[in-house]
Image (cartoon, rainbow, N blue to C red; front, side):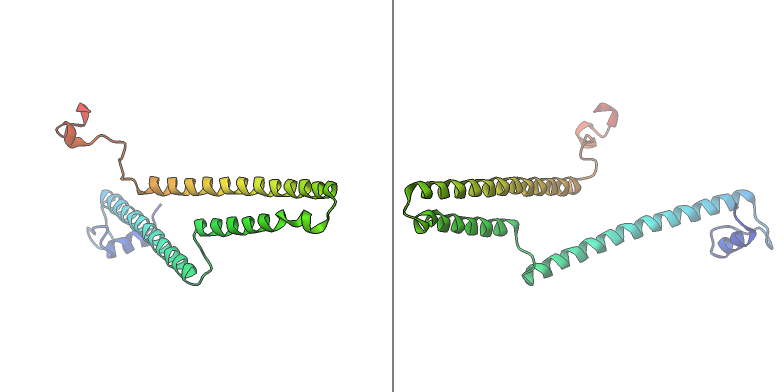
Length: 167
């Protein structure tokens, strides 16, 4: 229900037409109130869309600043650093058994233990790499879906002379 004070306020704002001193036609009140609500809804939707755009722009600026400040790097660059460090570690540990002992049997034991460790590290790295790749693919898919044009699955009207029934 709309109070009498609210009706007077909407009339003052031009949404409802007055018929006399505090007199209104019921139809005018209902239609004016509906126009007012529709306008308020439209403004709220526009405001929400504007807010999302502002948030996206702010996020983009934050990311650019993080890159410039060296707090953020490309995933490919990070993966290359990890691969380079892992390769260096593997190369350095390859000579460890020979540096530790001349006993060939003990060397073999150390080599086996090192290879087991390196295999576990490689398995975990591969698993994490797949997870990163899957997350990246999902992110790119979401971005592509968001960027496709509205009505992308709808037939183009000009292709059938403008008649949607001809599709």
